[in-house]
Length: 162
Image (cartoon, rainbow, N blue to C red; front, top):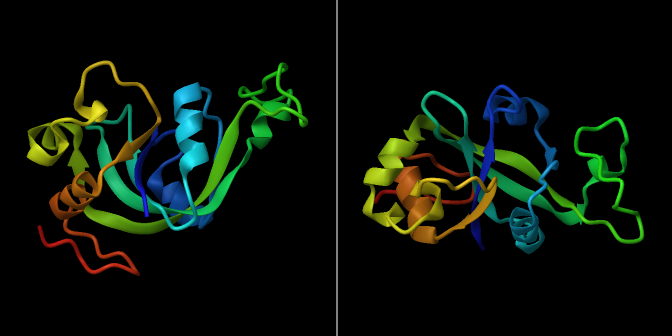
């Protein structure tokens, strides 16, 4: 299993929106490095759901990958802000995965709190200027965020006690 961090602005798509939808494509990613991370995701991988452009920004929940990378449907829709006229069905540029909510954290883990955690000291998330919306995280980073957030018990995992 791999671990990831996925970012969304809560006024665009929040963790509560994911909980209400129950399953949602993680689409609209238009950065090649983030797209490549999406392509590495496998069914069952866990994602820290991060609210960016929030006050304060931070991890608010955990999502599970339930559908592996497929062509992002928005790249073909001329009415979408994510439309890419250079992309084609034969050679799609952009990918998406399907996710579902796994657990809401009892309390958010703010970016400031992550910056204080030894486990997160080498993460690109805590460095100034990081704008990627999809990032790999280590199991240590994942477990530290869970522990700081409550801890949250995942349906197929014991509660993090570190």
